Image: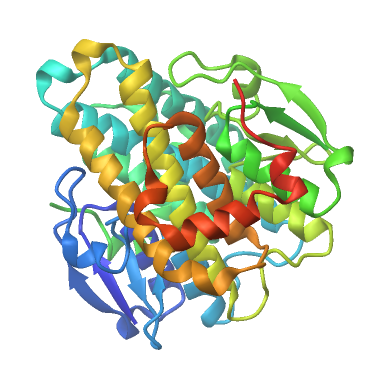
Length: 201
Length: 201
């Protein structure tokens, strides 16, 4: 298996956390990339028109994306367990959607603040994205008490989302108003799968 | 079941096409919404912090999002068939990712062109989004020949993506350079599920 990788991408991190949790990370060859919101890495785009990391290749050469599909694939081919097959599947999937929603908003906010030339920045858009993140954290704060010790695609995605906020928005003090989430994350981020995938530039 | 709805949303359309294909559309109560990229509909945000349509409620009151999760749920509770359970599942899921990637890029391009005040628009971002769409259509053009008559979550998503381009980007003449996709879409869009869900303002 192969994976187009960026050490700063939270979506790549989700895939790698799943790989470590399912003990198949050593079977994945890492391909470096130059992913960028404006200048597409054309070596990735040759196989994934969206030009994004993560882009993944199975052992038979099939190209998989996006991160959600790759995570589900890795879980399935290693015996499952991170995405339930019974009715609890849907709450895990929705939690994954909340975490990905935080990440989508956070990446767009970062593009707005860093990639976009200053004269074209629009504060109302940035505000709208940050409110989306705040509401999502508030929802997680209410629900996270039931998730102590739970490792599934939902909690992995939440862990990667919180890690991304700390990495790219160090002044965004989400912990102040989310004590339960803070406690959960402190414990979850001690997992080897999380420590081995700490984001960096 | 209940669904927060907008007649212009391609992601809502995916859900409704699936509902019609699986003959459960008459069991879904439609809730109108005022979804907007900047001014969040707070009645939706009370249950979905991302504030987006589609937001869906099961008969037991569980809240589901995003559209991918809702589509998979509707398929599963009506006996499956639109997302294979064997190895062909992954190619369907990747096609769904391509189509959703077109839609994500198209919605961001529309926000850039319509919602964002003219003085804050950034042509390089718009160009990057449109190239992503173009590359995705090129990929579909190569693959679509194998999909004549195939109805699954991948082809439904592709149909809704092409319908959205026609609806919101009427001057974007994607048909000129994509004859196979044009022929496929012409036939697919004749399905009752597609005709019953034609987007409008």
